[in-house]
Length: 365
Image (cartoon, rainbow, N blue to C red):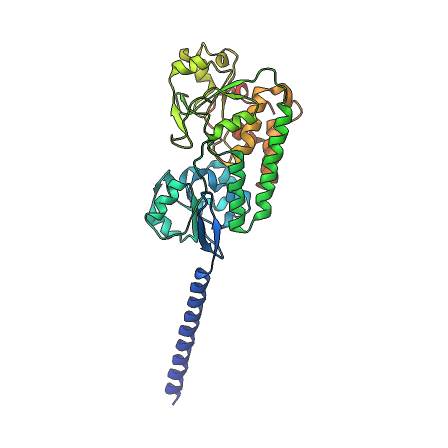
């Protein structure tokens, strides 16, 4: 009798467990089925889950927006280039987030699926790769236009993140910060008698640049400078519009300032090919800073800080009261809610691998 009662008890227990599992499963399916419609940056109206807990951001410059809007805890997949030293200090959990995307369109689909994202976000090219290999919901973040990624597009991108993640207030805080910074620069750059002409050089030979139809154009203009490559059309190139030019072309442009993203200015100063250029003669070759991500990409951080930095190295007399170090600290404190120390500021302004004369090519703080 006791044995029968025990069997009956076990049977009832198993029935209750099965019933509970079925109910939970139905609830999960219902949650997944519940969607809302949003419009992404290409105008597509797409359904996304009503509740989003796991997000894969698969285009490098866009990952930082999850930090800007205070939603980094929902990141389940990122890109390998985003694992910067500074960001690892800001977010100790970043190392546990998988990085299935290496570079544009090169995504490890099997690894991405293991992260079980509710949605995937990124460039058109990266999202088309995801769509071609999975059934995951995708959100297109950037669109190719004649002007490339403008400040307005950057604001739109952050606002879209805020809308999707329910972080509208944080998104608007960044947008106001960027807008106020641009107004500040416009006032400081008023009535410049002669604008500085800038050559932006990617890569080890510093001959890869961005033309007037790319995101860099507006950033250089905001700093009160002239892009020597503004007449070039390079939008169709890699990483937002890269195109290589000849050394003869750079010599003909004869820029007042040269900004590089690799190597050291000292190597440029000692390279005989560059000696005849005004920027070299006047000791005006500068290494581009690196914050949570490289400033040579169309990112939210670079949209704010790159024009501020360039304006200060181009026209230092106009910014005696507001150093770039103070501006960087304020951005990190107010937008990323992280207090930089002086050593971290030095690392941003003088990326690893610089020569000992780093102060030569960065504004004094």
